[in-house]
Amino acid sequence: MNTTQFIPEILSEKIEKATFTWQTPSNIALVKYWGKSNPQIPKNASISFTLNNCHTITTIDFLKSEKSEKVDFDLFFEGKEKEEFKPKIAEFFNRVANYCPYVFDYKMIIKSENSFPHSSGIASSASGLSAIAMCLMSLEKELNPDLSKDFINQKASFLARLGYGSASRSIEGPLVVWGEHPEIEGSSDLFGVQFPYEVHPVFKNYQDAILLVDKGEKVVSSTVGHNLMHNHPYAENRFTQANENLEKISNILQNGDIKAFVNLVESEALTLHAMMLTSNPYFILMKPNTLEIINKIWKYRAENESNICFTLDAGANVHVLYPENEKDAVNKFIEEDLANYCQKKQYIYDTVGLGAVKK
Image 1: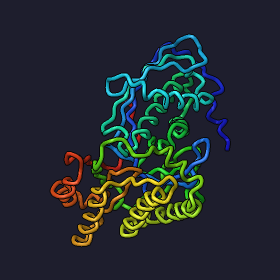
Image 2: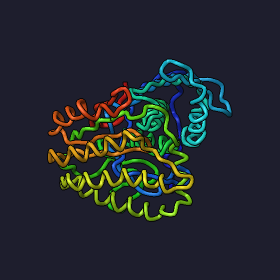
Image 3: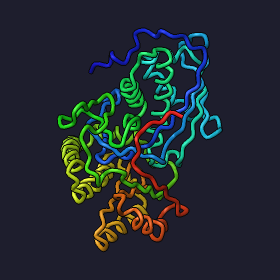
Image 4: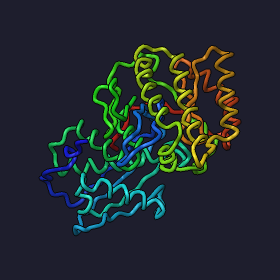
């Protein structure tokens, strides 16, 4: 793996202080990545919809200081200093230090807020770490004005990945592939790339309603979940299946076979949870209301000849996916029926988005 292209050779400018703000989205994987090797290299390729409304807004103030051996930063989340979040961010800075040596030259004040509940299965680490990566790249652009937008996005995805794998898929949109795959031109284990082929109109402006079944923290962290794949009896078959499914969904996204899309996306979600059910130690990530919602979706789809489907991340919340032409009908179904299975009847309407936005 050649990562030398991400090590800055010359930083021509001197910046005493700067402030950057980025809004970066969460994403929802259609073909799941589950299992990795160091440093944050996926065992299989994955593809996700970039979201729009579920995002993190992060501001970093950079203040030039004496060069130190330790990255110096304060962290505020939703207006409050969060010491408990600092070890994860400190580890991220340590991982990117070779690629962003300037982090030792500045005191950083990081202020971040989410548009959705933290640590509840809506990939807050993906949006949060991608936002920090974009702020770092904004500083690097000031230090080296010759950097191109494409390089900045690619390196930001590379940096974000070192903090949290699927964060690599939160820089661009609407569809991003992460993981080297022979059928996806330009794909890499090191960073995410935009899906390189023309997408059928039915999959444009796709809808995603996130049903908040459980807003509490996840039963098991993603890191622990990924590590359980190391000695998993079905791991190798799963990695093969995922890469085959990515090839299938690539064709589906291009030819518009929405029935095949529904089948593959739901199968991927259930397979992810099956891997946790059959690991050791084993975990049940769904809640009773997760299953109630899934069965309601299946019943609604059969009775209404709908193309509604669900997917899940490593938690209890349900992502309800549906084409824009079914928006009114499905939203009514959610409000009148599915909301009853959500914590405090809470859900988030979202759509496919285009990635990071500078504020």
